[in-house]
Image (cartoon, rainbow over all chains, first blue to last red):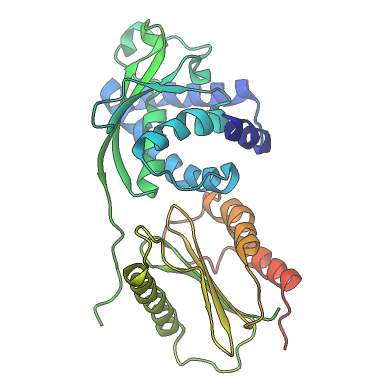
Length: 180
Length: 142
């Protein structure tokens, strides 16, 4: 928890409204251009993935956390440190599977969803899917291959925001040199 | 402390950046040199892991010879930084932290123009930042 606060203090802040409206405008533009809710979901997840692969560097550099020894620790770090750093709110984890490979990340107050309403015609839009992508991208840079999906979303009248994170495999480092 | 050279590799072993500050003997080919360095690091690390009495040993952080010292730093995301200096250099952890945490992250990973795996030679803010910092932290002439 404390690590999250310290890291948060170090972060450069941007105006929340500006950020929210930019993201909102982007999603609605995508909806107009693609005209297909599923495709929009895929695209924002992909965008998140690309963000995640870069964001992880800032996270490692500024948070000062050292390597996690278990996936459980990874989950806690995402919830307590990463969420605080990049979203300004603290999340928590729950529903750990018995093998500790799957958990739910809960963010009660997702700042991304403020001022947002999903219109009728965009039913099924996963507005927070970008966060799934960010988590997937960031963890992939750490050799952890995960699947992330939105379980609950306040924009779909659920009581909270919940993401399911599932560890698929841990990559071993490989040597990509020449054969000579 | 006298600085010799800096090498930066990504997770896949691509050499992103290499610079010599003090190097009396030039190699024939920079690319060959970068490959050799990576191969050396890779084999030595594998060797250290094998002979270490502690399970889960992460490798090595430096070695010294009579003539030079090689220090090594790796981020959790797999970026590798290698510095060669004179053998009297101390622990370079803070130097690496600054190189990575400030210069690298801010000018490279946060730059929209950075292509993963691509060379950083064209990234002027990064190249200048590194040079300025190295010159402030080390001497470049014996």
